Length: 560
Image (cartoon, rainbow, N blue to C red; front, side, top):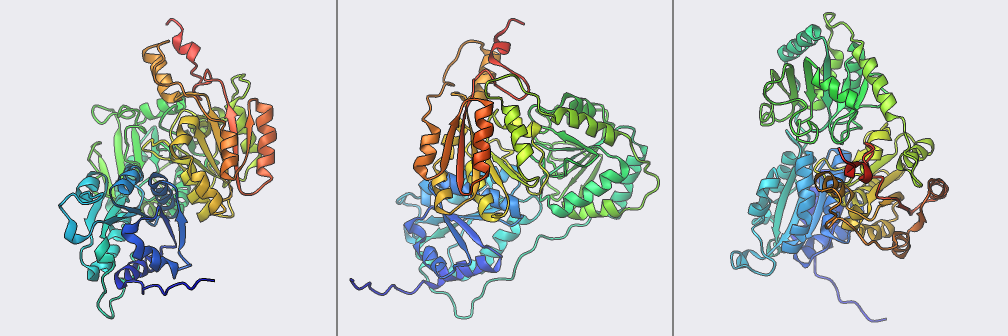
């Protein structure tokens, strides 16, 4: 056997960087390797406690890091290389920004001496990522690595959580570091308790309200926030709606849960928000999707009182003028509300009424299709654990799960509020690695899947245990729906000619089956659920089954 030459020692700067990540609790990194950060990869060779997940495309790796940050509340970590790698990863950074999720992207950069010459794959990363991050910077001095890493963590988790990008010049990673230089201590999210006077004012508003409603989720929402806010809302009978794709922010079994806002909400919930005289937004930014284009409620001219609770003062009064703005972390606010003793607030009947409306809306209703997606969700509800994690990207296919699935666990919904396609499979990889004892399901459309379907290879390589439900209607269904609404019958650029996804899944090493009827789906799902590993069910449906709302192509084309 040929002798292997001795490797050079890992450079001090790279080893220090990895030590700093470990000090901050980093136990997993998602990467597409690049020569620009080879010293970091070498340092990770000696850190088996850090799970290094090798991905197939930087966009998938960044989505995994974003999902991991969502699941843990600590920044998801991703390493990519220079221009092509960083631009591929930018979609994950954008989602982390719009979704308010903590993430740190490390980018291998050109040597310091080559900067500003448009060197190989060179980009000004601070300028490129500036609009979609909380902070973008470059570490030029290896001695400052502990400072930059600690600041990156603090920035990503404080206030409104979000992404940070740090560029790492290749030659800097090969530098030595001063003897005795150590990582900075673990950075925790700052505690932000609500002002007692503000809480008293909130309770007074609630006592005077006739038809209040809360809209919750986001901004560092966690298990503590979920449990305490639910206890508070149940005590006073306050109806609680969740913001777009924040459906696990409260247990849907709660007697005051009233459903989710966003695309295709329950009309009775829409009317409840419209008629509310007090809206308590907790964590929600009240963005475009949650508010139906800033109309539910409107920022101006509405006949209601708005209480807005958010951990970032820059978010308060940014779009919606708040009658009472409370700057606090979600868990601290929720705990204070749950423990607040105020006999002036008489319990409302509205919470129970709103929950009954949601129960009726949440009951699966099939449309009589050969392969009916409502029946597919019902099958899953009957068989899967209550804490199953559902991951999806963007597309009308997700609407059936948003309407009919019950997100009982926390976290149990990994879905981009930014509406990015291709998120579901990478998110499921991240969830499977993070929660190996929980059931993980990725829901993907045909167009959505092929944005990042290559990450099935990552799932198989890293022994993930996950099910992929791939809904194939041969179209970019969401765009087709809008196209038929605006230009009925004039189909342009929205048809898809697809591969045999079951065969593709098997080529990646997954178990896979193609189904065309509801009965075939039930049989295939039972088989998939009985196994471990990566499993894919290719569901071929009629494009007529366009949306969970009941929208159909024939209906959209019909004369009005």
